[in-house]
Length: 443
Image (cartoon, rainbow, N blue to C red):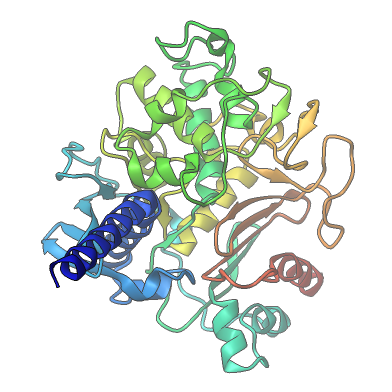
């Protein structure tokens, strides 16, 4: 009997060891999930003013066991079943939500009190009839309810000649609902850089960007980070232990983590998509200027009158320029119009002359991961002159973000088109068709 009891206790111990070992092996991925849940719940509640954060969780086996609970007026805690892998996101007025063990002190946010005219223009009673078919198609009119839900269109906005000519929203969304741009943030980071270049605070050719870079990395320039040709080792795959998930959900100082990566390719020879590059660039900019979480508000939001835009920061105050810009659809459209106007707003030049033209010019490098990626923007004409998508004009360029976020600028048509939504399971949200149909309808 004693022998049997010892055997059972030994087996139980082995099971417990296996469970604990398995948990610690999977913990980085579990923390990715709980970090996502905490940040998402905090931002959806406090920035978007919505009460359905679960609607922004993509399909994942962890979702049924993820919990997001309020731990204070400013904090949302993500966990597995309320117990394991806890992560907390803290809300700071003007700066959004930040994952950290304790609430970070990000300072006081600059007040933006003079709204961009495009953001407060009268809401059209209805789009001109000629645009209605394009809007209907973008929202999946005629599809089944399940297909419409998968398509997930939340906002479509069309600006022509600087005026809103069509605007529509999904159920539960409207002109006043901020939406997360995800990687569209990278394109706006390009504008933030342009502001500092115009002011003479930085140059694209600046190198020796980090004091610890005493090796070959010292030759990396700001332009290399913007164009993602730095050569730093990176993996954008959202999976266990990859740099992108570790940066966003495990590192309090995201820029320093990216800077710790070694050179995997000769500088300037490989264009590799890297959210790390853009976030590191913004840390470099913040350090050079001496302003951190408030930098986008001072340099971009206030001059452009983006009263509701929020760029979330990490725990040390670096704006997460790769991923975390929230703005109302009209504010995204205003940013597109600013690009269309080559950085001139209300008669004042805020970006260097010709900045946008250069920013959407794809440079030729030896190896390319995304052939139409320029400097934070994607261009419809590659370095070899080939057109990426012949449904839209050759001079079109766009910002693109996770789960179906699109901001198109078409200079030849004096056109800006915004499409936002939640479309994690849809391969084609119809964004190019939308731009094509809007152009065709307007002629």
